[in-house]
Amino acid sequence: MAFIESLTVADLAVALFFLGLYGAMTQRNIIKTIMSVGIMDVAAITFFMMVNHQSGARPPVSGAHPSEMADPLPQALMITAIVIGVSVVAMCLAMYMRVAYRYGTADWKILIRRLEK
Image (cartoon, rainbow, N blue to C red; front, side):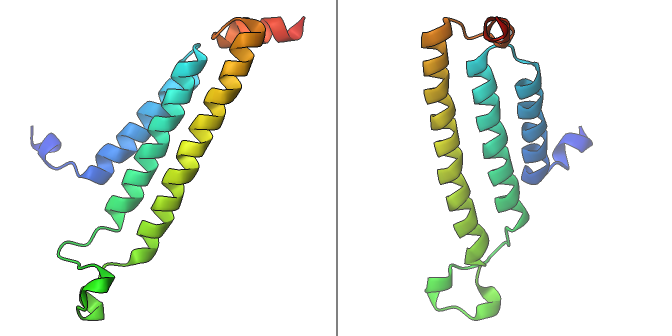
């Protein structure tokens, strides 16, 4: 039980990333693969935000002393990563819709067999 109490949010984000990676590598359904990639994206963003977290840091616009301010650069980069992640998932879903309409399947193995013919 002491092991579970010693876990940080960054540790859980790494575990969530590898859970998403496992899902992306083992799922036969294209939708589940896309969802797994989305989970990996959220886990990576969570990890980078928690690694940079400073307890008691104030926003840069608060007028506090610079040593007490939070660094805004990682936050700006993660906002950009969120937008890119949403765009990637949206593009994957759009491509999936086209593939499912043309080939009539959501299974990777069946799709590969139909593409090889």
